[in-house]
Image (cartoon, rainbow, N blue to C red; front, side, top):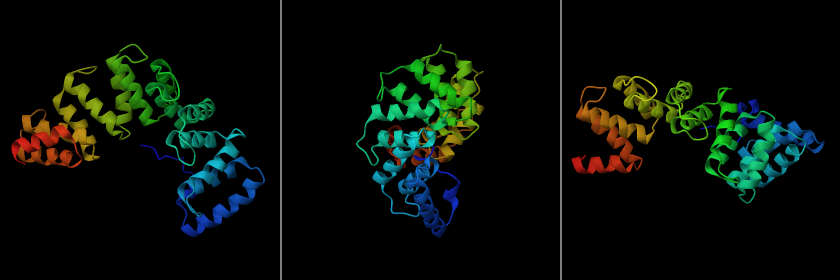
Length: 261
């Protein structure tokens, strides 16, 4: 997942440079410079060069957001979404996400899609969710590509189309999105949108499992247990089941308990 706040290039600096940079932003921020206000907010949100203080971060995000800075509008929306420095308020989060999304902020477009999909701060509307996911997906945002693929997979807000679902899952999976890798693996496993191919299914599920995804680890364990797409190997089945069980995956825990692993 993307980080909670948008980090700009200054965030690779040393601690001494952070402190100097934060100090430099203060003067410009107090003079009303929106870029400096947004970045000073980021400094407070991350504790870079100043003590971490979400309330002060919100103060500066708001200053910049009210001047129309899209990054600040996104970060202010995210603050309301998470309840960082302000009382959690999904409606207000949506207000600021929309402001930023309409200016082309990719993170805001994705989060606005999530809000419409989940009905957080707005009435649930899958069609509008898909609209915003597409905006970000077409510009390469992996999480939006995965979610847009899901919309086509389930026919949520768009006509159901497994081939298009696979197209977007693949886009995201190739960028390393674990959920997309799992979903693409399932498409190959079930032959939805692509010819059924167990080996390719295992290939993508393994990608997600190697990133620590418990569902994928459980699925890979099953593949080795049953010999689906790979040679049957109870040693590897146990390894992946135990990895998933360590993360609290209930089905994996049940398998381990029944087999005495």
